Length: 236
Image 1: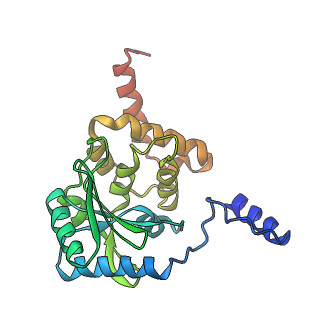
Image 2: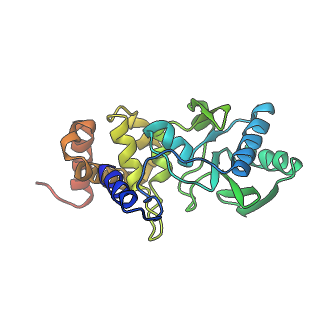
Image 3: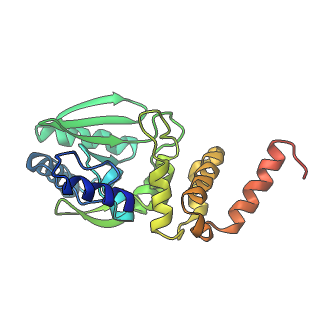
């Protein structure tokens, strides 16, 4: 963050019109039409008492304070509630489509999107009612709403490991911002058999923040190492 701030100051001092670097945590102002769309959608869901929780960049900002530009609003729902939300938003005049029945539908207008997400694209994790029940209160675009808990947010980012996008940095920032005060058992419960992805991100955190290794409970390292030894046949 310090590097990004210094970089931006140098650019401004040289009177150059370069864009703000992607790593900047400066607050991002939404375009009027974008804000109006997000407010309308959230208000509609609230009016109908449809269970949901906001994820994505807004949830990340809530838990870490980091702001970044986003063209869409990510909303987590169970599969059955996602179908209801689509019908509701379609009645409001939004263009709606099911992009992938496994995990994603979209509602859009004026080039801005609302993603209705019911799980991970590989089908490994599905949004459950407990995710919504555990959501944290938040105010987004002036609407009283809620965001997914940090544990569910971390779990949702475990599989986002692609050339064009890597969410491991978000996981690291969540752990750091919350000083490791997370329900680790909950994260492991959601990850299930994919616990190695959790371990990988813990190692990444240790590398990124070596002075804050104490944010990770020692019991996690002990258990992971024991399981790794058994899995790979090591006895020492």
